[in-house]
Image (tube, rainbow, N blue to C red; front, side, top):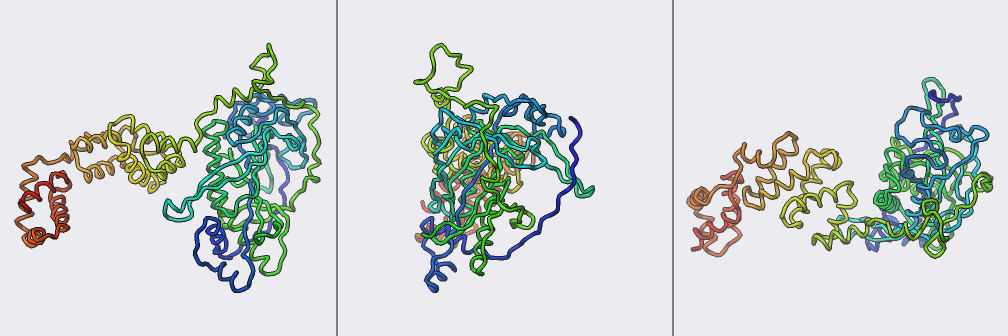
Length: 546
């Protein structure tokens, strides 16, 4: 199967854009965080005697399982493969083909459920969910609707509602269930030739659908919850969770209501593949629904998509209900039976069964535990540990630098957070793309610690490292003659500054010690940063105050 399947194109959608402001959404997020500030919404509530509208957000997250083969076939899972090149007879729904369950996918779902504090069902069932799209050749999806593999979990996440660390709050979202299901194919729309092409490479890939209760109120919360989930999946290795490659996709169910009243009619925004777009889509949808209700309109129960160019959600179709999917038991798959140490049969081949307790023992360190360990092990601040864990690859970079130098980790974290991360964000790079290696930063900090260079020179050398090249920090210092001056050279410059600034010297001698910083700065400027600040201060105090 090498060539894409060709179908006639479908009619387009009507675009909808709104200019309604976001004050109301931000107000609700602030109230939930305990911030007592006045806002447009609070003034409206006071004047009209009605409570402001509140967003209600629930999520359905589809995480692609990190597995060599698909959920029910031996076809290879490979990103960006040639169209229809990794498709088995079962994936294409040829008559007479049967599903064979992938053990790795079951283990991944159990591990994920345990990490999300779920109850693992020792017996779970598979169902057929019927819908008719061209990228689903069987006309149904195999999923777990009646009895999923894991239920009743809890995800704890943190997000910041202001510029200070004290503005960081902790919340929990309840996990309804974690279920296994197969992915569909992909439709590729060719507008120029008015046709739709179907690529079935993705058809049958194993997914974990993680369904969350509507416990969130705005886009910032939802994005934070998804980011924490993404970190957990990556730590477990159960999903690579790369949103840009479609390995983590989010459907957001959004409605608004007044506190204390029943939830409103919800809309579903499908297939969001970016945490930033997720926050924007949710906040836009809350604003759109609020405006409609304030204008006396009604909300339609519909499925929408997010157009990132417009910054708006657009309608796709009416929302299907459970009755539309015509769920039925999957006749070709028996119940999935799991075991623990108490129920494991005697003389059983352990390679042929799933032992929940054994998987629990093998759980790796989760992000929340990692943050606590970093604070305890290195004495860094909680906000620094949060940044290290949440930025891809930054924790490993930091710990690598710590291992390669004897510099205090508290000094290292300042460089990593301020200088290194600042450089990455300025250049829009990831840690893996950085031109500054962990070895180079460790060497640079060692040079500063050993007083070979000053702190200002260290920053100059860092800027040189950011430009690329093969020179090490030591080579840059040597080639550009950036090493610290000896005491004799430093004393000579200090004496010159004292002689040229008699008024400042007199002020210091009269008790205005703050002026000493001016003299130190002048010495550093004259020496072009090559003078040791500690030595400079000692020499100036000796010459001025003695």
